[in-house]
Amino acid sequence: MILVAVLCLLALVATLLVVYPMANVHVSGKGSDSDDALDQATRALLQGRYPYLERTYLGNSISPMPGLLMLAVPFVILGGSAYQVIFWLPVIFVILARLSGSSAKALWLLLAAIALGPALMHGIVTGSDYLVNSIVVLAGVVLTMHFAERPISVPAKAAALALLGFSLSSRGQFLFVLPVMAGALARRAGFGRAARDIAFVTIVAGLVTAPFFFVHPSEFSPLHTVHKLDVFPGAEVIVPALMLTIALTFGWRSDGSLQSVLEHSFLVLMFPVLVVTVGGLLRGDGLGTSAFGVLATMFGVASYGVRFVAPSANGT
Image 1 (cartoon, rainbow, N blue to C red):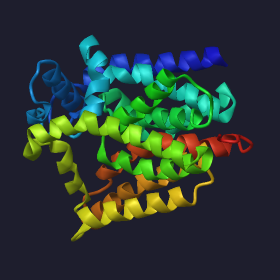
Image 2 (cartoon, one colour):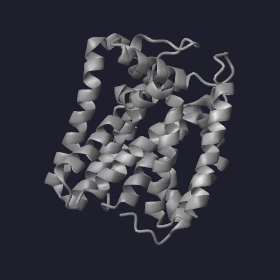
Image 3 (cartoon, one colour):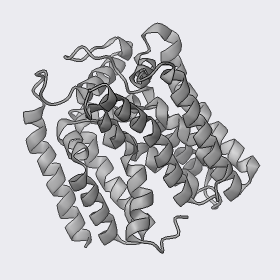
Image 4 (cartoon, one colour):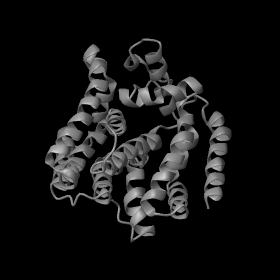
């Protein structure tokens, strides 16, 4: 089964290598400028320029936060951020195999998610960072929860927490995962340990993000993405407030299991997607905004998907 998984992953890689150059045509209405946004911003960062002054060929501003830019650096140097999915797909396969207890179930979950979610495959072949962003945050959450009550060296623990901190400095909605995790960590390893871990993650995310914000607060374009929530009067404040309330409620009621963290994080992350999608439909904008659901997809696959294929998995 490992051989089959490798062959399937290689097939996805081959599809990316063949289709991506054809999709990456820089013509309005074809492909996507998501990869260009990350590439341009990361190259600007490498050249010592402020990345959030960049604009894509469609005139769009840069939405990924600094953590995602930094994590994309090696891939941009090697050819482009679109190819980072080649590294992260095996990572999500390993995570799903660990959670489900079976490489076969992990493979079916991953293939089913791609087959049943056209936005996932579209994102892979057009170089979108949404799927990678989801996997990176999920990896940080899984590692942090896994090491919460296990004896582990300080450098290894710090590396796991740092990965989560960097990944949370990717898009603002992922910050709402922290209250969910805080409650689970407190139940799992004690309040003191949870407070230290969450504080470390928050400090890393802050140190990564703050310098870029304070250099040019008015030009820090990731903040502008909150306008995507503008589907009814006051939504830009009401939706984040409701997300925080939901996340805090889940954290307070958590049983401490990784399964609950992943399920609750998925629900929290999907809430603004549903609001924006319904708002778009009511305004006659279609389902275009539903693509943002890819950012939450891997949390759903790793929680509800794993529960479906492996009901006995303990999710610890």
